[in-house]
Each structure stands twice: as C-alpha cells, then as structure tokens.
Amino acid sequence: MTIERERPSRPVGLRILALILSSALWAPALRAQPASVGFGAKNRVLLSDGRLLDGQVTALDGSELTISGAGGELATVPAGELVAIHGVAAESKRSARALLVGGEELRGEVLGGDEYGDTFLLGSTVLGQRRVALDRLEMLIFEPPEGVEPIDPERLELPEDADEVLFLRTDRGFDRLVGEVYRFTRRSIRFQSDTEEEPVGRRFRELVGFGLRGGFEREDEPTHILTTRTGDRIGIGEPALRDGRLAFTAEGGESIEIEFTDVTALVALGEGRQFLSSCELQNVEQSSWFGDGSAPLFPLRVDRAVDGSLLSVARLGGGTGLGVHSKTSFEVVVPEGVTGLVGTFGIDDSAEQLSVRACVDVFVEHDGARLFEQSALRIGRLVSLGRLEVEPGQVLRFVVDFGPGLDLGDRVDWIDVAFVR
Image (cartoon, rainbow, N blue to C red; front, side):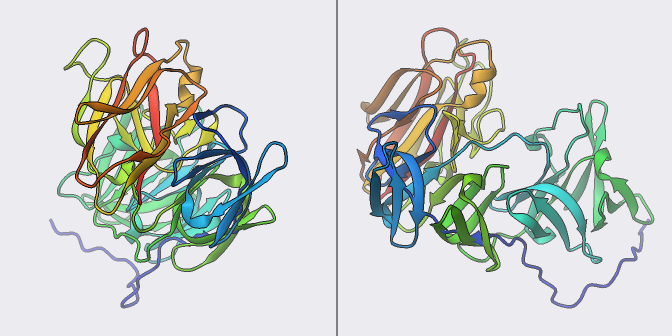
C-alpha cells in the first residue's frame, strides 16, 4: 500500500549549511622533551621536525606560536612547523552526539529543529548552540537514560535499502524503524515509518539513535581540526590564540571564540602532510595473546581508542590517530611529496582503570629493518617517534606487540602520526 505523506513544503533550493564553528587565536611556549612526556604537562606540542615540547601554549597566529616552559622561559617557532597541540583530555560526559559525514562530531543537548525537518539545534557546552543540517548528518546518538550504558555507534548499521532509520531502545539493545524524519522538537523526533500513515512523536529517551544515508561532505576545506574538552571534533579555519582565548572560523564562515583551556587538541592540516588515520592501511593483522587467528580483545579504531573513547595518553588528549590492542600490525605506503614521519604513541588512559598493568613493545619497520623501537612501554608515557626519514613508495610496518605478561589492558593510541615534508 502506498502512503501519501503530508508535510510542510520546503522552499525551493533550500540548502542549509550544517555547522558553524569558529576562529581561534593561539600561541604556545614549551620545553623540548626528547623521548616522552609524562603526567602533569599543561600542553604538549608536536612539531614537524619531530620535537615534542612540554609547557603552556600562550600565543598563536598565522606566522608563529609561543610556548612558556616550566621555568617561565619562552620559545617561539614558526606556525608552519606545528603538527598538533594537545591539552587536557576530553571528559566522558553523557550527551547526545551528532556524527557528521567526514568524521566531525558535535556533542551536547538536542534543542529542537526547524519546521521543515531540515535542521536541528544542538547545544554544545564549549561551542554554544550549533545548527546541524540533516544533509551533513551520518548518525545522531541520543543521550541514554541514567543507569543505562551507551550503545556503541559501530553497532548501528542501516539496512542496505534504507536511507533513514530510527533505532528504538529496548531492554536488550535496539530495534530498527525504517521511514522518514519530519522534524525535531525539544524532547522528541517526529518520524513516520514505512508502515505508519502519519508521523509519530517519539521521545529521545526512548531512542538510541537516528541514522541517515547519503549525506554530504562539507563544502569548505578546514585548515585545522579542533577537539574540545567535551568531545566536539570539528574542522576549523585560521585559528588564533591571544589572552587565553582561541578564535577561529567554523563551517559556513561563522567566527567563534572559546577558552583555550577548553581545547583538548588542535591539529594543523595542509599541503604536504598526511595523517596516519587518513592513510589506507594494508595487511592489517590483529590477534590476542592466544595466537594468530584468535580475535583481539578490541579491534582497531580510527580517531578513537579501542573502547570507543577519545584518544588520551598521560591525561592529555589527541586529535587524530588509531586505537589498537596488542597484537596489531599494519602497513602503510609512504605518500608522494613527503620526506619524514613524526608522531606520538602511548597506552590509552582508559587502561588505568583496569586491575592489570599494561605493557607493550612498539616498533616501526621498513623492509625488515627497524626504524624505531620502544620496549616495555607502560601507562603514563607519551613517546615521540622523533623524525624518521622516509621516501615516497616505501612500505612501513607499524607493530604493537605483547610486552611481558598477557595482553589485558594493552590499549595503545597512535596519536597525530603524520607524514610531513
């Protein structure tokens, strides 16, 4: 039976820009840490020459960044050498999550939507109220009720023949409802399933999420990736840091300003730079301590730790990366136009809550030769690769192997590893 649906007619050519982020004013100053950074650093700064600096970023603009060391000494470096700034690790706050096409994410409270069902408003603790267009959305995860554990978005798959799916909360997980969203209200979503004759309002607390197929990538190119302390992760333009405030331009051109203490990570993109998390991984091998062919405790994840949380080592956050569990290895072909590999790694802070003590061996190889090796790595250290000289076309192998003992707790984050000029 064909169901005719009544809904407000949309203005012709209506194309709502999805997110509006901000501009940032930034400046850093740090002490060089040749091998690793431990607990207690205010910021850590990764540079394209492989140095990892520890201190407080105090200023940043298009030409240079300034860092203040523990003794008050100032260091200034060209802004073009910046790879990433890491700040306080993101909080694990319960909130709704808007997952956007291209990997961006906003977190906060859903505050309703427009009458046509094209957008909804999300209140971010750090970024303020953001209007999100449905044509930029990949998945909206609703905040679970108190006492209910969140469901991993990786489990929420859309059927092949469905473009819009509502995931209904059940005692043992969720059910899928295929149909079409009509609009968001302050506490519910009006959704008409393929078996219903009219839209039905369903409260957010009854829902796990809403998935959409066919969304669009953002139209403008960001210069940086910003992660906030509440878990927002967005592309921004031309950040600047001044007087403790970061100003930047969001998607759509809106100017935004936030406290720099709300920054978990700021990653610099640009020509001649490719991050490991965006590379094609080849010959991925994952196994548990029980041997080849056995499933790892957690599979590899992109831009997340293996448990789905945001990247965090030594209580400071990361911007991009891979979360893996021992034993994991993969290969990457060095892209064109680069000469070096820089980046950091360490055991994710989530392992600190476990009763076991993680310990791993980590190394990077090329053609059987080890370019870098770190043995018996334990929690609380962020290790720098330094700068490894590479050539386009080389195949590098990244390995996280078992250290002494079993593999329990061996959760490793490769953080902001990048091929650079």
